[in-house]
Length: 158
Image (cartoon, rainbow, N blue to C red):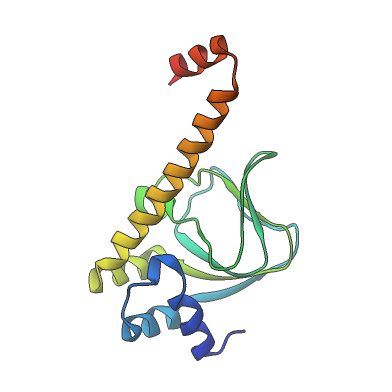
């Protein structure tokens, strides 16, 4: 369990909250739930309804679709934020690789926070944009490695 001060110091360093005032962060950090997950635990599954954002305090999680790994996230990383905004099912599964501690922010808590401090929405948009750019770079790198006929087929499928 984090003390109130430790929680504030941790949340202050999370990229989507970095530019927010301390008085706001104190309130936001105080409403987040602390969750503990054992190693090899599925936090959520692709296709499930999502109404919460998670911030990894400690441990490592894998982002995956089925058996295909998309990323590994470490302390300070956020996940689950997409379904908070588009009301679509989770786009990937998250499983722990080791004992992991998370803070969880619900959709209602986040919307209340955005009403009070719109800057948080801008920070989340930056995070999502950065992730899209990273995925585009990975896709472009894979396409560059394909034989020319394969590249044409991939482009046609888009």
